[in-house]
Length: 474
Picture 1 (cartoon, helix red, strand yellow):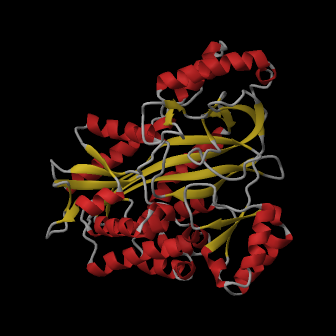
Picture 2 (cartoon, helix red, strand yellow):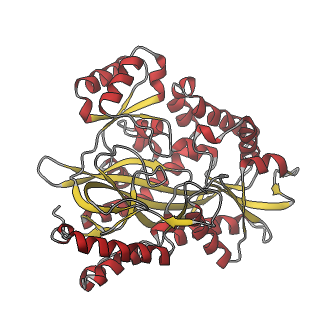
């Protein structure tokens, strides 16, 4: 894909002037983060890093990603309801991965006691890259699906205006009109509001589980504000607050500071470092309640890398989505090569192949939040250490996606304006709500494009590597 901004990227003076304009517009639009120095305070804020120009994305792949999102919603929901599949799939992982084991313990406890919640809410984001094929054509390949704390729906709704502004400054009004409007936070709030309504208590509130130090608060506020406009109140609390002031009544209704909670929306709880013993107890309390959890523990487990790898096995999609061959075909078309590292012949073979051609693979642990995957020499060292140890079962191997790089400017506070070679990752936000066995909502609600310099193998915007972007459909 040739860049349509080619000649502009050669004019340094123009780029600096455009960058000043773009940054000011980003601040006006609310494309904001708290600072690294003061992550708990909004007294001083900064713009969230973003690209100077929107990046070119093939329309056909954007349409394909949107078209398959409702299938992914159904799939995640089906996995979360299939305890036999989850147990079998994660059996080797939970022996070796403490974090997944902890989550699974809570899952088993809640299952044993009987699940109290009757309404289920999924807010997820499925992330893709554009594989550059041998014949030059790009293909959509899924990197992962985020089933907990899928972020940037709020900021992604504020960036289109920034890129439209840049193109309008250049008198490229026709191009500016091609930037897609996008409002994921509105759609995510719709899902929460539907779950709140089905819970059926007019005075109940939404509990947002937040981190103490949250730089990305404005992204979350966008969803809170959408809910407040629907007269649904959100309270922000930490796990620690839940363990001190959360309680269940005899019907397992959840109360926080004496206030009934209809929906628990997690923006914390996806990494091991976020849990103390106290926090695990708080998570169990929340899971045992009849409040709608987003996600409930089964849906968080459905988003693990191990489940992703098992879903790519022949016949698994057909088992989970019986009688839906079109959905199965759409899903399978987006899968990259995924390989189990469980002990045995299959895992041995995968390791042999990866050691022989390390540039073709990525080693992934069961972690969210960016910055965890191993590539190249680091991957080789890890595999050499792991290959004869059962610990290897806590990882999966994935085919490395090789997108075609392109030029753009990444704008970051305190960094000079320079043109770098980049690759992008496209995320589609999905929302579904189920009451009992009935699906009452299933939709896609917007997109997120993140772009990073090619020297950075791994990591998202929150991890400080990728920056916000918009697709320019071609």
